[in-house]
Amino acid sequence: MNKQTVNTQNAPAAIGPYSQGVKIGNLIFTSGQLPLNPQSGELVADIEGATKQSLDNVKAILESAGTSMDKIVKTVVFLRDMNDFAAMNAVYATYFPTNPPARSAVQVARLPKDAILEIEAIALAE
Image 1 (cartoon, rainbow, N blue to C red):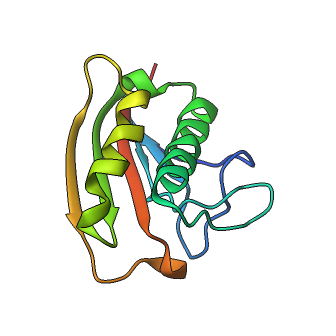
Image 2 (image 1 turned 120 degrees about the vertical axis):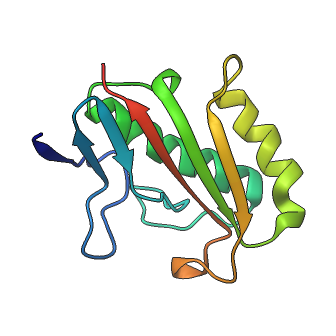
């Protein structure tokens, strides 16, 4: 199988030695997306805005690979504080109104740039 990297200017550039996404076979794996605004480089600090920004970044990567959010089969949400779960969930639900993907959500000790959350996804290629 041929592995292809996925990169777009519509999502934040990688802050380390990794790709925004990788396509192999009929799957696309996104790297964890911090709530960084790709235009300004600013980190969104409130949980609702951070969830939206991270999911918008995931969406941009998937679209650049020729697929879409409705093709996501699995996500992982990393939260700095599990007390933010309900607020994150409310925003997250708007991105997946029907047939939501499988998901894990875990609290972590710390995220890059001291972000309050990070979201990664696995999706089917079109």
